Length: 186
Image (cartoon, rainbow, N blue to C red; front, side, top):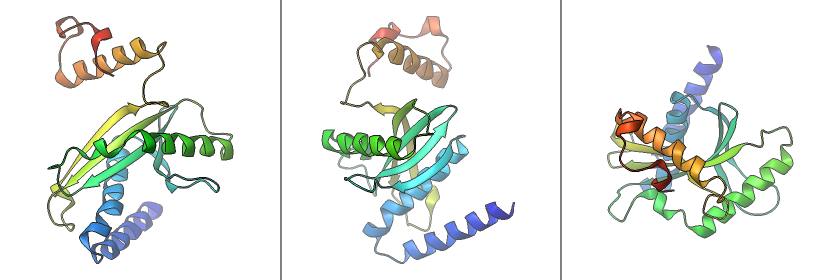
């Protein structure tokens, strides 16, 4: 209980300091705070935030775990989605940098589980920074893979898993789902 109060107090202090910055500078860190809170409420365990390798480039915004899977989360925050969804800013070069940072993380954390994935959390914060309820948060699991696409051997498995998640979210029985699971987009 005391640890939670200290964490909540530090979070409020940080958010107060960030709100004093110009909106453009404060938006990214506040979006990462909101994404971390969202993931914690969704049952993820947050291990690291803003992890950087000692050598090389790149940064991992959030390193979390869900079950026995290590999850590297890239957070993108925007004040509007007028120019496209925030996650569209994660191009091939950014994916390569995230994969490089993940490799460095595994080298320095040999005890970390080897089963991992890359997720994205998009935050569109349209209201004032003092009102986090005005932000829209979208979490995409398995957002991308090393090299940009799923290895061919895993593609049907991943497509079926995604199809099941869609069916569960829509409350549709598997037999009533449109199209075969193999045709689900990756």
